[in-house]
Image (cartoon, rainbow, N blue to C red; front, side, top):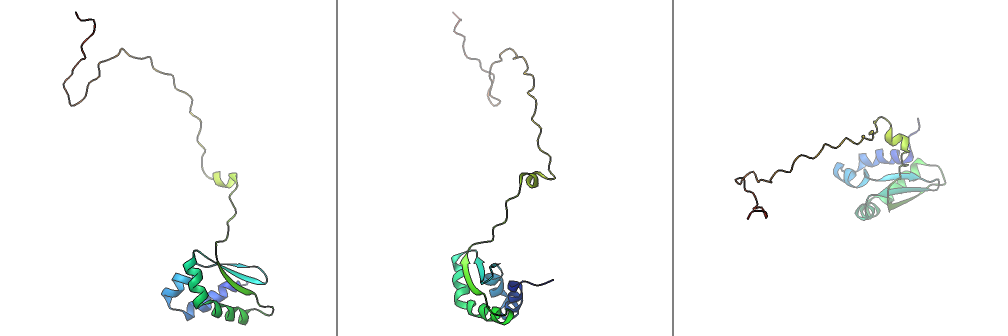
Length: 131
């Protein structure tokens, strides 16, 4: 099994950098190997800037050591690898779909009862028929 170029670089960088720096700045990077380019995708501008200022030269050196000519150009940019969207079958696999409920028969309305508030004594509104 061949280890990808980026994973080989990660192993070397992990040995060279302090653990906190590696975990904060290098581990979040996702690599896309496009033949003549090694695109490193960072979650935000802060990671891009830090990696460009502190590690891009070293990553390029590692790539140069690990790959025969022509050496891929290393670029760092904001982005992430897109995962393919699941198909409807994949989305519903293993789950039961809800069954449409049948409408229930409506009960016959009962005789209207006076409304009461649970905290108040039973009070009825005066009837307009009272004379």
